[in-house]
Image (cartoon, rainbow, N blue to C red; front, side):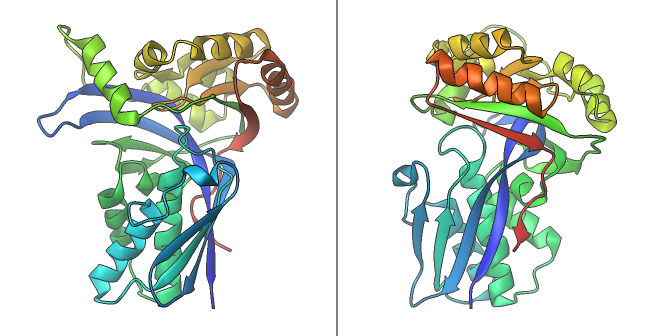
Length: 297
């Protein structure tokens, strides 16, 4: 017997970042939107825990116990006093190291798959608590849809969405380290007061109404200047998408993936074609959101 879970990528439609805390983390107001790019995580009983992976850039995915999918299996098994004796197979379609929470998605997917396979009967609250232990983005990968993440992003409030939002995502030629981007944020912010991070009411209202043009007006990412400082070429990609008619552009999360909000699916294809021709990025994908969270297939 095996269990397969499909789990979505995310884009941060707003990422407000507070000052560094004593523990090194930053308080966030992180407005997540799940989008229709998916990984599939399959768990099968095995003699011992092992991880395999296929798909674009699968060679960059760690296959040891540092993988969030493996850590999820170990965490759930530990709570139940059982051995995490499963083969976890990840079929990747979410860009690797792209700021779209692919690793977090795999963690959430493996957790739900192991819970189903083992029949642990874990409550939603327990699963979310394990997700929060695994990483800031993991709880949202379980929940999907749209949500506001506070704390370091792990405390979720589900948000209403009144329509479908069409996106283009451009993957960069190299990666960006999330810790390095936060360090650069701290460096750039040195000597100035950083306000408490809050979600913009206008942005939440635009999500609730399904108003793409209003959402475009209020997209924001406080990490974008740091990402551009470390990877200046991303500005060329953003400009290419803007020139092709995207309503709004931003770096997704800590990058290096850039995201382009478009009026509809046809406009998304037009922007995607222009980005592919621009020579400023490695690959381009289109997707719409909101998408459902981790789902047993």
